[in-house]
Image (cartoon, rainbow, N blue to C red):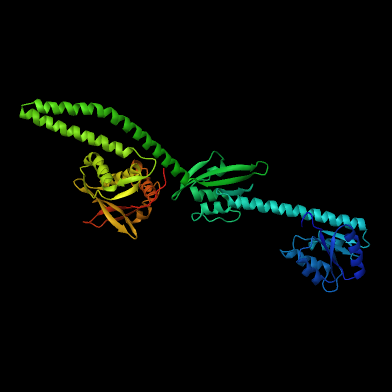
Length: 476
């Protein structure tokens, strides 16, 4: 009912004189009156949603009790206030019967006009309050369901009263929720302990399958014992925090590498010049050979310094990258650490394939893949790295393949290989290397895939990275 429109009152009475009198009284009080002669007609007009129905008990087709019951049972008309009136049904039992059928009030003829108007106005106030309460409940329920956090209300008996869609989604498919389910048992099945329900404390995090779930119980009403069980999926947040920490470490390493390179370059240049002069002035062949070896080693140090700077320094905007040259430099930097495992790196790269991107980030990807291949390789074997131009669909790009002769990847874990925090290295691995690598490649519009064999005599794994050449990438 609008606050400015006239309230609509349906008067249902088979006697015309009664309808006339009631209409005069209510119309004079500012109400718009509708008329019905029978119970069925009153039910039909009730579908137009009048604000109040004044319903006589004694109707020619069905009783006012039955008409009221049907109106109240219909969800479309259940909220309409019904005032039953009667001149013949005057006993307390009649009044009780009317109220039990759903009537909101009961008056007997002759009806005082002031009492009638006051009763109708009271019913209108009641309806406004119910409408506002229902609107508030609907708004609360909509807000409750729209929350990204999983929320469930726990009653004083420890059982679930109500929960939102996010709560059900977090619990699914490990736990199916039922009405009046014991909250402690639900948490026991979901995270392996019911402590948060029995002893509310600061939020705790639990691993549930591939996700990290934060559990917190917050008392709502200390008198009734009701509480709010909050489940929050913090997997993405934790991954974002890890990525931020990794980026900060890379930035700090880059600054340190830059400072070290500058400090090394000056004495390195001096040593190179001194060795050159010593070579020119020495007549002893043995000394000349030793100085030549020293010169070669100094040249290697200079190359390592230059490659380290290229590896850790990254631009704020994407730049053209020679993929073959970048992969060759990463492979060269990895040779020393790989050699400790008695594994060799064989790198064959075409230096003409150019893509647009962030060299530091791509260096991290290829370094991760080469390191993983070396760790999987048996002693005395080669990690084979190849860079080639290729086409994939309508896209021209660079394909980088990294192959090892390790034991291969078991079939049962292949689907989880790129999942965050999944590792086969125990405490030695974070389980984020491949996940971070794929994230970086997606940013460069690239892809990563692998094939692996565990067959005896032909074991090994090949990771393949594809980077398109003409894709625009957002700035860092």
